[in-house]
Image (cartoon, rainbow, N blue to C red):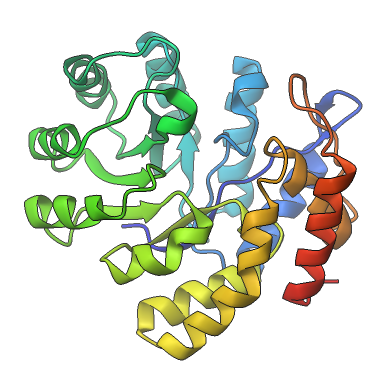
Length: 293
């Protein structure tokens, strides 16, 4: 269902409020540059700092502005099952194509708790679910056996995973158990080349915010089996992938956007601060290496 370069969109702010005009322009730019899907309200979108009303508004704007040109996978995760359910209901009402559901953070549920959480949501909202496994942020790891069990219980509902575990062997485990139809997307830009080679279908990307055309071209070459072109583009993008995490995200990506899209402000919400001078230096060098400035 989903493949290619799918940016995890930043949420632009100006004067403490959502900058709706900049967000609409970002959506258009991403689609026009070849992105194959959009993820509003993920980690890069600073979802934990959005009010519920803001989160639902961002999702609705993204769906409206995309206007069916590419699918929208709405960030709906929460550490509270009932809040995640509410987000999913709002995303479905707005017309989102799927929900991205992170493992509940802070609570540290067991694997049985994860099964219960995701099963509860799958049973109550008729919206495809992409699991989001990022144990570096949530502490909780959605183990392959849990992913497999969920996809087998709900084959028409739990349709894929954004895997930011850093363990590429899981692609094969998932693929052997669930087949090629289970959508596996990398959650780490710098691992996307290896991830696709192992059977992945694309990447939910931070870097694509800044370099949407290059990321789309990389994914297209990778999926077409054009190894030479994929390696060339990967090497062009790799310093930028690394630079995006030289400070707390999304500080570096928002700074990078001010360099390539001056209609987006670098404003962040606490507890994230503007990136350091050292981080800005790394971003500047990476943008130059990629030929973006």
